[in-house]
Image (spheres, one colour):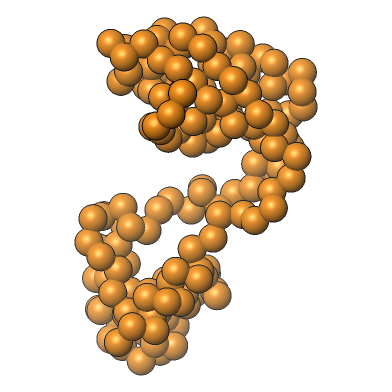
Length: 157
């Protein structure tokens, strides 16, 4: 993945300010050529630096008001298959390989506690899952943010 430079960061901040901005509007805002904006957006998208728009959707708007984190110990032989199996569950929204007592930390969403029970049973049913431990999020104290990092990158010239 390429490193985001100052201009890339300024471009992403401009998109953050106005997600519906056209390439022409972005080029005017930033004072750069339209082709430069198009090329950079294409490169950022193709490299994975600029992620899909669906990541911006709040799960609550889809009816999933409960968030939980599931620590999972897995069979080391089935690691990749287990991760693939977990990824097939729509309520699994993030999977991280971690160190410590568990092997994976999985963020899941559910409609309510009864639905969480269904989701955790589905997680336990994935081949390779040995043991789980679930922690329910009471509130999101600070949502995922990238703006502060982009502002710091944009300031480097």
